[in-house]
Image (cartoon, rainbow, N blue to C red):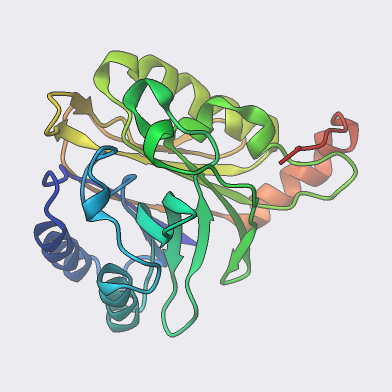
Length: 262
């Protein structure tokens, strides 16, 4: 499976501009990747205090993302602000729009209270596992990366996913944790990991250096970006190699039992 890591600045609170730029970037990689991954809140930036930017699931941004997935024959993964209902409030929704198919989603579980997210958003109580082109996938949205139980392969079950997608708005001031946790999640879950972060400056004055990257379960670095670099990297994930590694070293059989309480 070929994954495109798309590390570009987000135009603050401007959905039209960000969707236009995404279309341009997808045009450049047409036919070269199976999934394109963009950062958390790709269409607005990390606008936690701007509820007017929220849309219903199936709204205009969803419609355009599905049209792009269909046109370019590529799945698109990222996150955006969703308004479910007046009583249920806002969600930071991780998504994957697949060509000519229904979209998949995973709402963010862990809300970054220091950044105001917990005041406006509701956390997910649902943990989803996806499948696309025969590859089993789970998504983490930014702050979820810090909490290993949410990502953990369960004991006694033969690897519920092969690829962990992470979308982030992780600022430069804490980038060392992003770097360390990406590698840790790949190692402990015996999976590929692809993590895409924002780069540039946002409307709140935070600076993002990027550091999007991909690892295999051997912790070989398959893709990385220089500080502040803008661009796209495409990686080719070998699932046969992953399955061989799991058979040779079946760590999942010795994992601890756990239960996620909603």
